Length: 327
Length: 236
Image 1 (cartoon, rainbow over the protein chains, first blue to last red):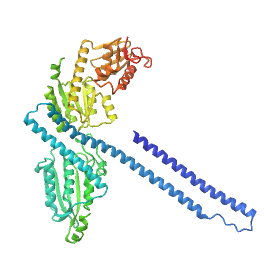
Image 2 (tube, helix red, strand yellow):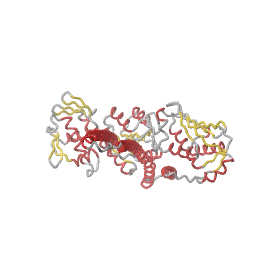
Image 3 (cartoon, rainbow over the protein chains, first blue to last red):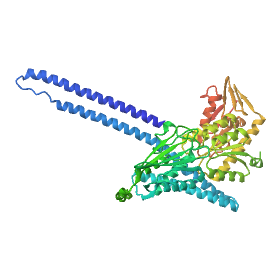
């Protein structure tokens, strides 16, 4: 409610400022025109012999230009302010989500520690608890890492290790690794097509890309998950199509899903956990590879498709490799 | 109901965080409660509709239906069901919303195991106290008002309305102690099971609400009167 209020507040100030500006402009024109008339009429009567030089047009036009400049900058400031307010709301959501994501594993760890401390837990149960606690610790570690990663992305600090890889082979391996990490059966993933080319990759960050995509597919699916990966090759770039049979993305959300902190809130979406950073990170990493990513969905309940385009690495580019590496 | 009977209470645990759910299930079972675990909003509502429970432990951020929606559903069907909300969210609005929709207590994650177990025990005790008193005398009339402590339906003149479980418990407590001064501290300790040093305003807010329900002129109360620097007193 405070947000809404602050938007209305800003809008009112903006409109008032524009009115003030308009008044100043009118006053300026009025002053110039009336002065001009006085000069012309009075000047002629008092000293007709003086060749009267009417006030030059220059300050008049100059004044109007300056005033318009003021108005334009006002508009710009207003626009920036609104973006900032929107970002603030998103950021608040993010904080709430991160708080949740941090607190859940933490409370679980605390619960197990207190249980172990206060109860006589049988040996085999103890082992079970340790495994669960380690999983929670891992989850905390991943979350902290991804937040730190975002911080370095924002500062445009990409000191990654780019190397040449065989496109299909490597990507296939990376996706299977992600699947294993999320305890997804290998049979749930199908590969088709072939890229048959080399690409320049930072393996770790591409792993993050597919980790995030697989994680999303798992989170946003109801029926047994199926992931289809299709490789395609054009003259200059290779295409990797990542599609699933999940609940899809509502049309109006497609444009927003790559925004930082953006999350879809929908009753039918079975999972509500997350930070709103996943796809933002994905897009930033792909951008850093000089590639592009697009999202498609035929609507809710019809699965999602992500198309990743990465430039094909050719021998010619080898010269740039040094540069790319330090990029 | 004595402690032994409390031990057999059936608890519906609604928590979608796998690890936390398992830990809670283990601990509650160790305490002797019969625990049913629901992993999302749909399951929670299904289980609640299908069988009887004595208490609900409810997470807020859940798939399908969130904790607030579930609490509302439970309240519509069973106004007296004790609900303990568990949440990672700490915003005051969430707390207020939870309590308004009928959560009886609220615990933020991460919580201490002992505190959780104590609160559950307290809530179950209160529930059995309340039920015992209600069975003896479910309908209470005073002035133009009538309270049915079983389904929490009230009539004031021609107006009918529904009390929340908290409002009912406060009324019950005040009526039980008719013509005796009840301090805020007493109410907090007995109705809320709360540390009286923290939340004294809560009681006053509830009293204001109750006066609006039952008093002809809420600013000049006849039944729920304030006793200066002591607390409140119910008189007819």
